[in-house]
Image (cartoon, rainbow, N blue to C red; front, side, top):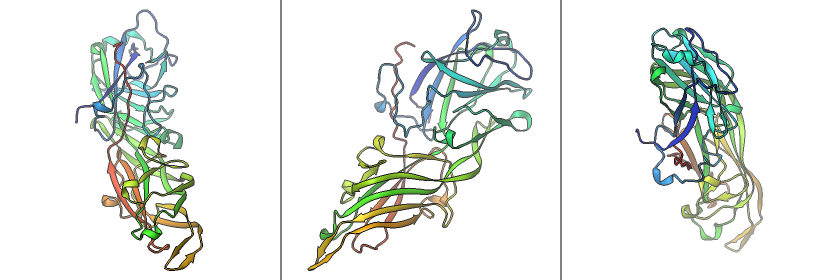
Length: 358
């Protein structure tokens, strides 16, 4: 789909002609003869545009909840340029910083007359080490936990003659998964409803680092390795679970919330679900109750582990997809297993933009 919301951010670029590798000013200082161009930046989820009705103008600022992969102005993105014909590195992993409300990068102006097209690619957040494949047609990004926590993005490749650039479009796509949970009490017996208190929810063995290989010719990438796993505490608190699907709520960090924007979500490297490996650990209390003349004492710190294997198609997490796992707790028997279901929904994003100055 080609529709997407655009965040117009002006970036200044001039160029520096070398055959094999570009040098650049990391501080972004401009000189009088440098050419200023704009970068037309958009962020999509799974290649799907953000509906216009969700776009709100807010004083020219880009604002979003922490579950949305957006570009933090305090963290640069990386920009790579490869000469299409020769495969020579034109732009070597430049750090593009934002200063005074716009991103900027200063390059020597002589390279604007370079007669060969350049294939540009960008990614966020910037990392120091980039490895290039044979002929420089691919490059690899080793993302650690700090980068995957930022919701890494990689742009589609863009081919341009440098001399003809007036506005370089960069369409960034999500390459990880956004994961969260919803919970409700599905107990059919009225006397047993409304007794469950969620105390903790932990995701176990979350893939959180890996190597992403981007193909400049094909304009797409893949995760080649996902070798680091960690446990993520999603919820810690004491929240009474609502009864019925109509009262299902998102799981926040310490409470159950109505809207996804307030929920606790995390990013994960797309992974293959394996038997006995990835699971969710749920800790809950049950209030005391009386049923058929018998009183049942409260239950504290009940722990259940529920495997994720078998919930997704082909047991594969698809890059750029958002997963919300639904937990329904049934206390017809207090020891009856929690029932899981899984859904894949669009990224519920809220992008704020103001293009009055452009």
